Image: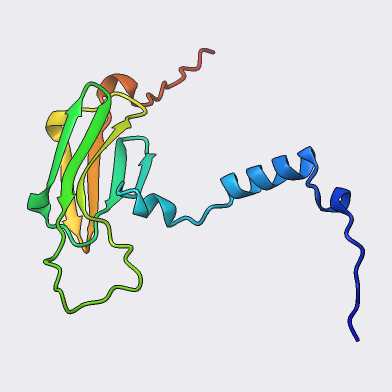
Length: 147
């Protein structure tokens, strides 16, 4: 015996509000790995009282593969993720590794002394330490007491 269900086309139509909710849900709940697919390295940028520090995740690269330039208050990272030679016998089912050149420009939050900057590359993480210029470092003012 078969069941018949009454079709109500108006019930199946999505309201404008539902459509907007779905649009915003899809736009703001994307997986975090989407950035990695685009080819841009993930970075952290923070500052202390004395310096600005940038950490960039660059797995598979060597220190010689990365170029760092600082101009005014802008730091630029350039490099290239090289693709290993593809073999014809392989059948890929999923391929998310990023390949190709990248360039990422980051605005620094304050003035830095580029001549004293240091960069360290360890375990695929590049750490750049940029000392703040003396003019922007916090100063302590001592208070004199008069009797």
